[in-house]
Length: 201
Image (cartoon, rainbow, N blue to C red; front, top):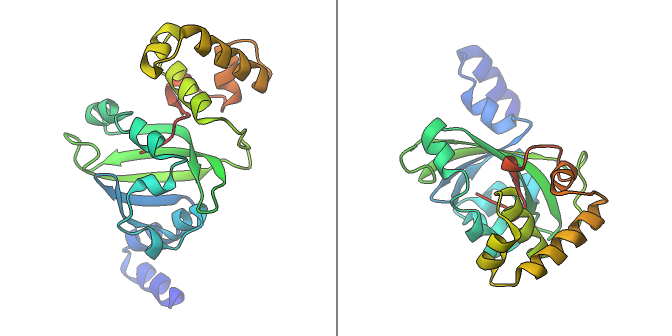
C-alpha cells in the first residue's frame, strides 16, 4: 500500500500527502489548540497512535494543565506580525517522561493565530537530555526568559522576591552556571526569547 502511494505521488508529481505522512519531523494540524491531525512521526514521538491524538486537546502533551494554560499567548503577537514562531520547550510523552523539543509554527489565520495552524516538533533528547525541574522551577525559568525581574516574578507567582532569588540560586547550582545567561545557554544554547520552560502551544 505504501509503495502504491509513493509510486502514485511520483507519477502525478503531487508530493504533499507523501511529504506530510513521511516527514522526518513531527507535524500537527491544530484548531483552537485541538489536534485535528498529525503525522506518524509526531504520534511516535509522544508514544501515541495518530487515532489516539486526533481531536484531543493539546493539553494531553504538556507536563501539567497549568503549563498548557500558561503558554497560550506566547508567540501570538509574533505569529500575527510575521506568521512564524519557534521555541524550545519541555513536553510529556504518554509514558509521563518529559523531554525537550523544538517547536515551529505557521498560522493559516494570522489575525487569530491559534484558530488554525500547523506546527513542527523535533525531539531534542539526543542533544539535550531533560534535567528534572519542579513545576515552580519551570515557571521561574520561563518568567526569567520573558525578562522579568525577581520582584516581578514574585508578584506573578504570589511569593516573596527572596523566595524567587532562592529558586534562581538553586537553578544556577543545578546547572553549574554563574548567571542567568549561562542558565539559558545550558537549557539549549539559544537566546532566552526562544526558551519556554513552562511548555506549550
